[in-house]
Length: 243
Ligand SMILES: C[S@@+](CC[C@H](N)C(=O)[O-])C[C@H]1O[C@@H](n2cnc3c(N)ncnc32)[C@H](O)[C@@H]1O
Image (tube, rainbow, N blue to C red):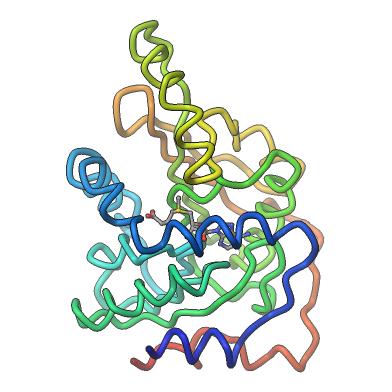
């Protein structure tokens, strides 16, 4: 309930083009956890834990979804989760209550957040970039770079097509379904957009076979910043950490 209230209170304008993604997750939200259950327990949980290893301070969970990362938030960190879909955020808020997790939840577009420059020590995004169309990859990365502190890290968990012919064939069979249900694709090739987004790649490594990889990047020195108007100063994470 609290997230619904948050969503209406903190509603930000969605630029044109967000409606499709918005509507899709509004519809899929009631089934999301159920549909993902075999993958969550078969694959994702171990990877989520590794994504958060060594992180601390102010952390943004971009595209928080139903809050599947919550059990792995580092103790003592100040975490904020953002998502475009209020229906997903409502489920995240239920998980927050159930687990007793300290996390602020906000309805916000990753392409245009309202956080000031250099807000977060780390930004994580699990399976967000696979749902962003190619023309949104660089803008989303640029925005994450803007709100990440210099020296901070951006960690992205993403799919790639396997090089193994049989695995690749099976993934191809799944492709129309993941496209239709999640708006997702396995071939986003997010690393390709890091330089144009002003980010330096620190590491890319596969965590699950040659299918799911962790991309670690950081803001490059001298990147261009967009200073958010002072009217948005209240969006600093500390304001959203109380449950
Ligand atoms: C595949 S789900 C992943 C959810 C979660 N991170 C996880 O690991 O289970 C993608 C999420 O990204 C959100 N999303 C899609 N486009 C977005 C955008 N432009 N800004 C913020 N969130 C977005 C969707 O609403 C959805 O909750």
